[in-house]
Amino acid sequence: MTKGQFTFVTGLILLVAWARWNAAGLILGGLGVFAAYYISLRVHPRTRHTGWRGCGGSGEHKGVIFGWGHRKCPGCQSGRLVRRGAGQLGTPRIQQEYRKGKAARKKAKQENRWR
Image (cartoon, rainbow, N blue to C red; front, top):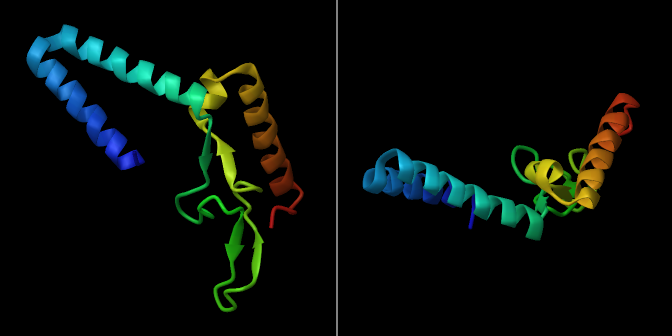
């Protein structure tokens, strides 16, 4: 399921729950969606680096002019990131990895060696 599909399905579940059971249904639907998200964070704590200037999980950016050349991705350093939610609600090991990766990226940018 993509991020866009998740947003659509979540909205649809909450709309149907609200239409059927009003406020109580909305609360129950929200709890159900949160439970599914929490389980997802525990089972799959990492995500590919996507978005604007994302590497798509490869860990490298290809050259614009010479496509065979590449450099290390400054946003992720390896292609996989710990999801933000998993950094807050995940297992202690994943939370530690999240903090460590965030600090490493910040330090690399401060020392101007992130490219």
